Length: 339
Image (cartoon, rainbow, N blue to C red; front, side, top):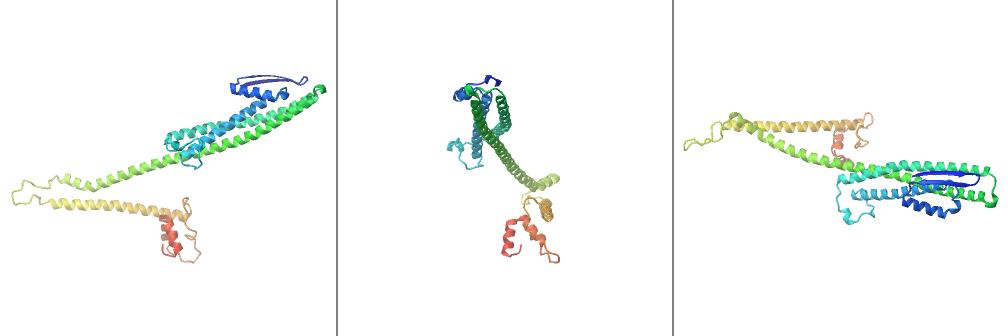
């Protein structure tokens, strides 16, 4: 779209060339000029009408984006507000994380540039206001044409354009706030989708880890027996023994003793390592609580803060209880029982 305007202040004649309009914009301009025919001579009428028309388009874009945001929030369970664009059948359709992410990205990609467009619109409105002041000074410096009442008509047209610009400026500022709000809501939705994807990944990883742990424990249980069977390479049963003799070899007890003892030793080492690791984690949590560096939950004020000379009554056990089971610890403390 391109607009060129020339104005002769002595004759109050305006000439304008406007190109690049579509059918909708052309119809809007024709209708407004017909309605404001008394002010059509003003050189800033067309710029004002174009600004107002562009503001209407931004307002419609706000409504469309708001509907999209509410729809996605409804589909993802982020809000219970009913969306007019969704019915019961639409709510039952699972679009998938990828499709929802694309829709949220589409909202952000439209809302963020629209903020810049709205700011440019507000600056354009300010420039038109300055132009109105310049045109008013030019008209006052020209000789009066009282027989045509041009001065009065020009003043009325300037007031009308000021009213248009006031309304357009207010709506543009509202649209700017709406676009900023929609951008933030889109960011919140995107973070929610990312968090949900991370949660699903964590659940799948935990499931795989549990399966691998079960396989490792099973392998650990049978590994000693397999190892010693391979080392001694002796059959358990001797089917070639004469009648009346045992088919079990005499050295079979060595295999049983070594297998049972080594299996027990491996299991004891495994569980001992688990207990030591757990105790070290508990000590780390207690130290974090004592230093006030835990940002997840804080222990009660009574823990770790006692007056000088007062006997500390099992502070470590209280902190350990709080780190392990904060709710149960609080209930026991409130009931007056031992932690």
